Amino acid sequence: MQIALFSPYQYNKPMVSKAFYNDSLRMRAPLNNDVVTFCSNSNDFLSLPPKQIFSRIKASLKDSENKLGVGGEAEVWKIKDTDYCVRIPHDSFEKYRTKFSLVLSEQDKVNHTVAKLGGGATIMPVIKGYTFCSPNITNKEVAKMIELMPQKAFDSLLIQVCNAKKAGLTMDPGWKNIIVNPENQTLSAIDFCKVGEDFDFNKSIINQIYCSLANNPATNNEQRKICAGKTLLAVINTCNNGSKMNIDLSQMGFERFVYHLKYHGLVSNDRYLKMLETHLKGLENSSMKNLKYPENFNEFFNHQKIIKVLVKQLFGY
Ligand SMILES: Nc1ncnc2c1ncn2[C@@H]1O[C@H](COP(=O)(O)OP(=O)(O)O)[C@@H](O)[C@H]1O
Ligand SMILES: [Mg+2]
Image 1: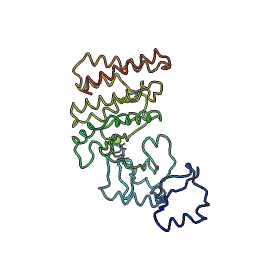
Image 2: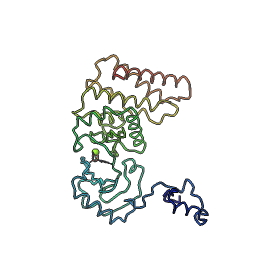
Image 3: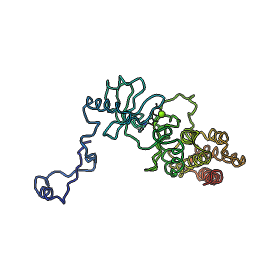
Image 4: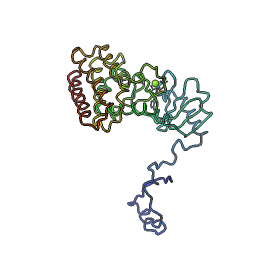
């Protein structure tokens, strides 16, 4: 595909409108949709020569103000005067300058990577917002922000984690791996990895999400209930029309999730919890049948309806 940078003409400027009526300009072939891109900034950071990119990274690493976060494996630093950050594994600070590549796999994209450097370092767009343990904010404030996120933020997060799973990656269910953005009202997962079948959280997508959002000690039980309810409703919303379902319910880990609800003491009514467990299992089993047949679809739809009501009763929606 041919790419042309798009810089709109400003017709209200006399010199430009004059130019527009100039034949040489009018005779140019019109731009088709597929040759136009709206990245008018030809000085995009990633198109600079690697040497310059490395020296901009090096300069950014000198100012601790640019440090966005630290995890078990890596540190993430904002690259000054750009919308990008660099993630450098703890033992790769001497190696990141050995490679620069824009060739990305699907798995790289899941992890927000836009360029790969040496020693496993990567460049990503900065995702604005906070995780637990972010600087200049308390964990209580982060818990409050998560509590106030709308249902659609939970729906998108679930789809993000399910898509990662399709690409062969599992979300690392840590407190610092979901960025909450109160301005855009979004929840974004950031840390996905390849794990073996025996990984504790494998096939347990709801638990990965719920634990990352609600397992911090600063989160109170009311907030946990809200996270549990919204995470479950996200599943129900996302498989709303069984025939177009784009999530695999067998990957959700309903059984373990119910165990977690008990463990956190979130649900006092054991009878309702048992019902929830039964209908979640029923939903999962009926999703494996051919939903084109009305009897299968009705079974699926009934479980969905009952779960919605139970979520309301158990978690206060
Ligand atoms: N794209 C990003 N935008 C903003 N902050 C980020 C981004 N990626 C990571 N971070 C911050 O850096 C921290 C560590 O990053 P992460 O990739 O989770 O490393 P680790 O694998 O060591 O846990 C995160 O907890 C988060 O605070
Ligand atoms: Mg992490």
